[in-house]
Amino acid sequence: MQTFNQNLNHSPPIPHWDDRASIPQHRPETGYPEEAGVENERSLSPTLASPGLESVRDEDTDKEYIQHPDTEKEAVVFQPQRQPGDSGQRKPICGLRRSIFCAVLGALICIAIALGVGLGVGLGRKSSGSQNAASNGTSDNSTSNPTYYSDVGAFNGTGIALASYSFSAGGYGAIDLYFQHHTGQIRSAQLTNAGAWSGGTYAEVVAVDAKNATPIAAVAYAENDVATWHIFYIDVNNTIRERINDNTTNLWSDGPIGNLNLKAMDSPKVGLQACWYGSFYGDATYNHSPVPGQTTNSTGNSTDQSVGIHLWYGINDTSFNEVEWTYASPNWTEQQVFNGFNGHAGVGCYSWGPGSVSYVFMVNLQNYVEIWWKDLNTTLKGNATHPINTWTNSSVAIPVYQNSSMGYTNFLYTQNADLSVSGYNVSFNAERTTIPSGETFTINGAKGLPGTHLSVTALPNQSGGNSLLVFYQTNGSDITEYVRDLDQGQWTSSGIPIPSS
Image (cartoon, rainbow, N blue to C red; front, side, top):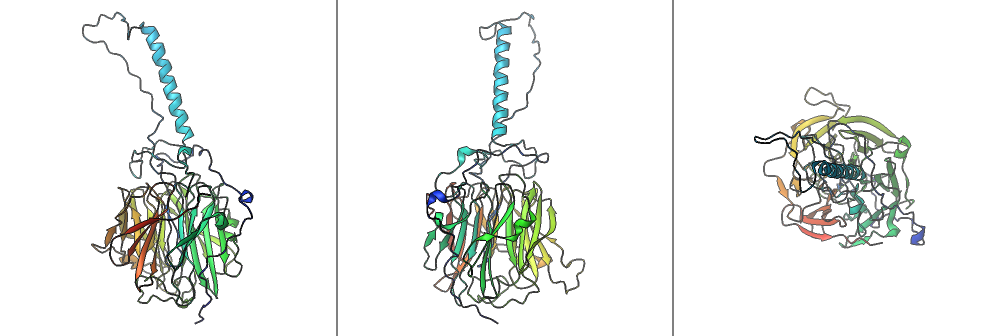
């Protein structure tokens, strides 16, 4: 086994700009056009975050995620009925002759309808009549409404993604956090081994063409003594984009996924997630948080048939597309379409543990997370209950908020209907996957914005234990970090420092 001993306790450098005026600026759009969609479309938000080296996950969207009631009302005409004793003689109404009163009333109704239609189109809202995954009737202070754009800190509805960058032998997992700044740029901030946050400035810009409230996914791994970071997002043209950096070039460049010209649905709320599959992030040796089914916290050589990245993104209201990249391949390939899932909600995945089975988590149209599995070991012979190389529903179902983001590291995290965030200790075992009774907790902190992106990880700490870390938005310009011991304890919270410019 070749050991990767190069010290990488520094985040991959970002191209520095000599002055802020030279940085391409992406200012928020003034709103989204009315979208063409299926009947009974829901106004929903995406997920998530994405995986990184320390079993990291991201995170699923817009502004303050509170839905506006529909402003476009259906006109209802009432036919007046004669009451007993009514002589039929026309009487003054509010001191006005009936004809004048009707003319004034008609003008007021026309003005009200015009305002309703104008607001409905301007805010990009649609009527929602679906009982399943339908609007809950609350206001949605989303990125489709410029009123709620943040002008400090993070973008209101930012995607959140995490990736580890500590690959030195015996190293502990410091992390990179990727987010959308209120200027529209995707930037990175770093949590060092000392526990302090740095970066997030205009010197750490990763991409400048992201759409408002883009979901962000991150994958990091080490193969053949090279540490590599992949960042995925949706650009202003709704195209899936990839940025890549490694410790040999220390430069961000466009990745090959752009060659496919993959189009996410034209919506301010789209689910997107990427996940490394194969050995725990490559052949580097380093310490990491416990992996389900693995007794050691040390990563060693890969023994999997193949390794690479799976990526899912919403292509319409009810479907996700899956694409795959195999390590060392120059191209991505399209895999299959997942129908019957909320394309605006989050996606989660787990595929870096021992064994050959990968898992993906999606929100169905009844607001339940489903866990699907796929055995990638094509040397095995499948049967009716355990097919090979086929995505199969485990039958596990978790009730969630309709716009829930999600992420997995040691626990599967989702947003509840009351906007709190809970973790589930899933026992992964293909068709026998379960959630044991009592293996659930709720973060005792501020509730997230409705449909907030969230990203999660677990890291070894200097005391010899492990800590759970969860990141999501609570007020629209923040990214709040929640920390707890892996086994038990109360959650503590703190805000990630985000530069104002």
